[in-house]
Image 1 (cartoon, helix red, strand yellow):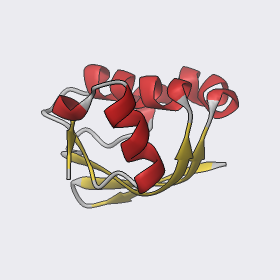
Image 2 (cartoon, rainbow, N blue to C red):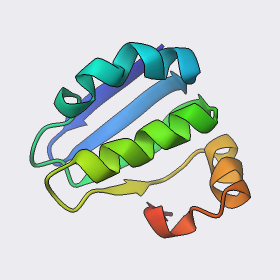
Image 3 (cartoon, one colour):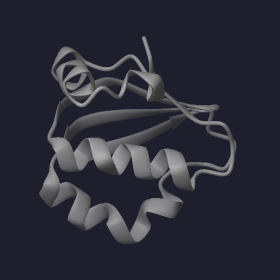
Image 4 (cartoon, rainbow, N blue to C red):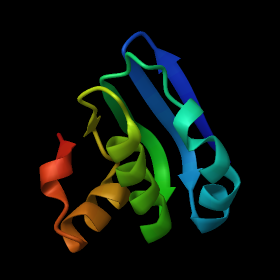
Length: 91
């Protein structure tokens, strides 16, 4: 299961984000992040499938502030490269 840990203006995502998780989280997607969140820290995201990556991009598009995704794990980085999504992520 996935966990969102708010740490000041950063939110650390920990665990696994799969299609099943996305289905469970979809209804609450607008409440997962504090309004002042600037960074989604992905170093604790051990696994994501393409639905999980799409969900992260949805969080980006729905958030009121300039939000960036940072520190993807190696597995998530492979998906970023595969789908050519580098512009949405920072190292």
